[in-house]
Amino acid sequence: MPYSDVRRYVIVGNGFAGTTAAEQLRKHDASCEITLFGDEPYPLYNRISLPPMLRRQLPEEKVMMRTIAWHEEHRIDLKLCTKVDAINVEDRTVLADGSEYPFDALLIATGGRPNPAPAPGGTGASNVYNFQYLDDTRAISEQIDRSKAAVAIGGSFIAYELAEAFAARKIETHWLLRGPHVLHRLLDEVAGEFVDEAARNDGVHMHYGEEVQEFVRDNGVVTKVRTKSGLEIAAECYGVGFGLTMNTELAAGTPIEVSRNGIVCNDHLETTVPGIFAAGDIADFYDPILEMRYRMGTWNNAGAHGKVVAQNMLGGSEKYHDVPEYSSLLFKGQTITQFGLSPDLQPELEMVRKIDREKKWYRSLFFWQDRLVGGIMLGKGNRAGKRKYVDAIKSKERFPKPQWEGLLDWTA
Image 1 (cartoon, rainbow, N blue to C red):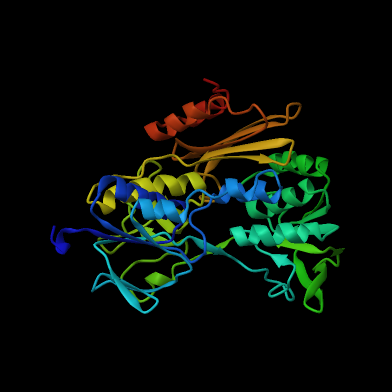
Image 2 (image 1 turned 90 degrees about the vertical axis):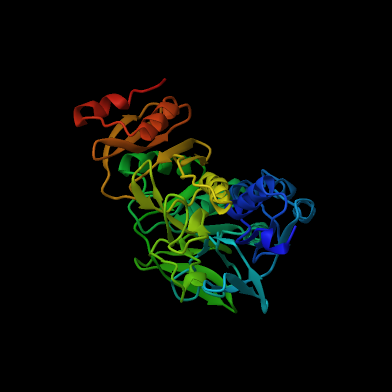
């Protein structure tokens, strides 16, 4: 076969979206060339397994999902510890390590990087950690072994996972949050109360309305944190969760459109440049079911993106049509199930809720222009009806406002 007949695919980012896309490309095109770039030294690992690994409930070998040998077997040219420097849109190449790699279709799946602690004294301290990567997990785990107390800082799921891990490892745990309750952009005050109770039952000291003013250091090591209200907490380990900055730098200076959320793409996950796609956390995509644009940072969404985008890189015309879902424990006493849109992604949603304080159950449904678009369920055993809700979202059915509260009782 002449070389010009062989399709060349380049994927930047070997996370779940990128690796899934590579696997699907090979499955459907036995002769193509696939180059997969990753800036870490590891093949794909399961990021949602990092919290249980940090809690020492899961060994590291169970976190790894792919091996170098797997990539060789599937003839995927995996380039680890390699940063892609630029995209030449006109010549259809990417530049990395001084070499050019031509592509017929390109996928940008670069995700985001954790924001550093904004207060003085945190950056560069040997015992202040972000929690995003496998190496972070290893380093935090080793520090926990050397610690009597730890502080989780921030109102995100990352901060929650840090607080949960500290408590599970039986060290004194403090959680500092600037907001009025846990996950305040996602949960209302009642749901926040339920999570607060679960945290305190696990021994976590909760501190609301607190913002770090300074990380107090001694020889490069933080010995205590001081808040703007004057609260001081001494500890040996500090974990911060202040969200992510999307890695959109590759689009700079190109016609690829970038928003404040990531790389803009349509419902086929194609960017403003034909043949160049985005998937996973980095994709600011149009959802044809919810009929709005947003960015979704869940693991399941990344995998679904990888499957869809591979079909379109192959020349297909498949739309992303999944309803994003997420489930997790919240300490030992609570669970959360989330599906579709939520107020942290679209603040203008309207809401109805149902509360059972005895069972510690909470259910909220979110509506946009009389359409059900999402929901949250708290409480062990409080998942009945979820599939029916997801099907209603996909159907785009409209529900007059007097019917909204009745939907809270769906169980089938």
